[in-house]
Every structure is written in structure tokens, then in C-alpha cells.
Length: 508
Image 1: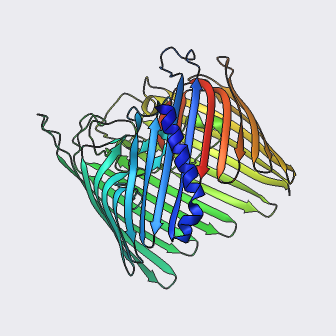
Image 2 (image 1 turned 90 degrees about the horizontal axis):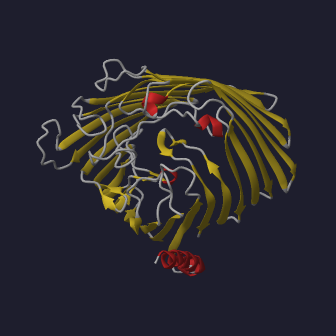
Image 3 (image 1 turned 180 degrees about the vertical axis):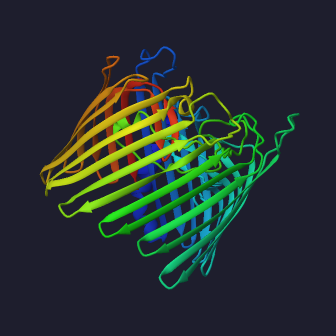
């Protein structure tokens, strides 16, 4: 059955690709994509974690458009899901479907929808496939524009795997832009209401939860500043230990570019702002809102060992960053970030209140027309006890990175990286090396090795990717360390595993 279904997905993709020209002639547009990720696991890598012999995740998206109407659906299958993915990702079925009518000044839709009010403090639906997260809203929605005024309305239930969350969400967002000379002022108001039945005896649990937010933004030339504040009524649930405290959040973001220098300042404070459409859920399931992560986003491998993750139950802090672009084709960036738990937080614990500290210096230099060098150094503190759970421990670490790219000729380029992370806490220090060879931007062959020399643990990874425009194939083998995997401050713990990975993607 599993093999047959995968063949059906592939057949539909190829059929849609073959009929694309005819659909266009009939003024019906058809497009989509198919992605399959498959891993053959080594089951002996960790006796405390269940590893299937083979895991397979498949996604087929098909979209149709005719004049002002658009419709689409997504088929998904998990046989089973990759290790580390949420438990609700099981089996196969129709996970996403919608129909929409869109004109110049308004659109109306029915089905699954992704939307965001302001910065997302009280409402944001999104798909982060790498984390197994999809909290799309299945219901009705509308967007309206009246000159400088935008209005959004939503009503429905969020997706949890192939079912719906218990709570019903209804919301409205209002935004007005005013231009005065060269200055643009934007003002927004949002409201979300969750109704989730409760028949128990705990009087702290409320059937109705309300959240509101207000925001303002001013922009003039290369200067932009915005502020948003949100409040949430009592929302006792498992994740906040059934606290009845009112939730609140405030963020402030300012960006300014002057000459060759850019400035960034961001501040946020959150308290009891975990908001879910089903109160019994944990991890990244049925999340209604989104708290942005105001720290430097790292992509280098060793810097992902101890990433900053948004603490929706309580944090206060921010970051500042200054980047200067030099005439010699180089730039230097300095970033400072600090976060603590707020005082008088209702979720008191015996842990250190410091959540995260980081200082980063990054230097980029074009050595020649075909060569580029990137150097990075950081010093950071990471509260493992609060972010990952377990006993109280502040991990202090320093990291250095050297990243060199060189284009040998028009068909061949190479990228090498050397990274080192030093710490005397947790699992100790690490070293990492990467070699990536690319041919005509179509073929890449790479090898990387992470070595935890404090405990003599080795994590190697080798593979190749073939990119043919709308189609790509990736094949890799290696051992992946346990740790947090984060996207935009949303994190998922991935257990250690070893295996052979085959991924196929096609767009049409």
C-alpha cells in the first residue's frame, strides 16, 4: 500500500507536468511540487530511542487557478515520520485544501490558510516542514482593502496532523497607513478569540480566551521603527502549569541605514504568552501565536549546538547590531544580545535567571573577483536547564569560524569551513570541518565531520546533490548528533541518528 501510494503521488506529478501546456491554453493554470524524504536508519545507534528501519515523508501540492478563482490541496504521507518529528504525523491523507476568490480590493477563502496579524504576537499560522510543524487554520477568511485601510478576518480550527484542534479561533486585524510628506505612519489593531469546551472541575480553566494587540510603525527614508504590545486573558494549561496569570508581550524594533553603516536595535518582553488552540498540547503543536527571536540567526553548524530559542513563558532582553560596509569590498558586523527571565514570574524555579548572552564579531572580505573569506567569533552563555530542561547549568562557550569560497572557473567552485567551539560544560569542546565542491551550480559533493574531542565522539556526513532546475535529488550518509534544531526561534529536539538519506523534489 505504501509503495502504491508513493507511485500515485509520482504519477500525479508527472501527469500535471505533461498537461501544463494544455492547461495554459485553456486559461487554467496548474502548478505544484512533490517532495519525498526517505531515511534508512541504523537501529543500534541509541538503545533508548525507537528507530524504524525506513522512514518516509512525502508531500504533493497541487494548485489550480482560473481567472479570479484559485484552489489547491496537499497530500501527505508518513510511513513513518522521520525520527524527532511530532507524534501526530502518522499515516497519510489530505492535509491541506482551499478555494479562494481574489479581486483587486478583497479576497475570500475557504479551507486551510496561513495568516499573520502584525508581528504574530497573538496570531500567526505557518508551515515549518523541517520541524514537522504546520498550524494552518482550516475555516473561512477574508482580506479587504479600502484605500489605505486593510482588514483581515479569520475563523476556524487549526490543523493537528490529520485532525483539527479542539478550540475554535475567530479573529480580526485592522491596519491603516498614513503618508505625511516623506513619512509613512502605520497603525494596527488585532483581536483573537478562542473557544474550547471544558467539562472538568478545575475552575482555573476557562472555555473562552481572548488576546488583543496594538502596533505602530513609522518609516522615513532609511529609518524605520515599530512597536507592538499584546495582552492575553487567563489561559490555564499544561504548558504553563495551569497558571491563571494574564499574558503579555511587547516588542520594539528599529532599523537605520546611514551611508555605509546600518544599525539595528530590538527589545522584547514576554510573560505567560504560550497560546494554543488545544490546551493539552505541548511542543510545536496547535500554537496560535509567534514570538520572534531577536538574536543573530546562525547557520554555521557548531553555532547551532546552543541556539537561542524564544521563551514564550517569560523572557526580557534584546539585541543591538552594527554593520559597516568598507570600500575594499569587505564588511564588519558586531552583534550583542542578552536575555533574562522577568522578575516575579509566576513560573518560579531555582534556575539561574540568565537565559542567554552573546557577543559576535563577523568579518567578510572579497579577496578577489573569485574568492571570498568570512571570519566569525563569538562568546556566549546558554541556560541549558531552562531551554532544554534538566538540571541547572549555564554553558559558557566560545566559537571561531573560518569560511572560504573560491571559484576556480565558470564551471567549478569550492567552499571550505573550519569551526571550533570551546566549553568546559556539557559535552565539552568541538571541532568541525567542511569541504563542498560544486560543478556548474548543478552538482555538489560535500563531506563534513564534527568531532567532540572532549568525549571522542565523531559525527561525519557525506553526500551529493543534483539540481536540474525544477528537479533535484539528494543522497547522503552519516551520523547526526542530538540537539536543538531551530527555525526563527522555534525549536525541536532531534535525537542522534545514523543513516542513509534520499530526497527528491520536483516542481511543475
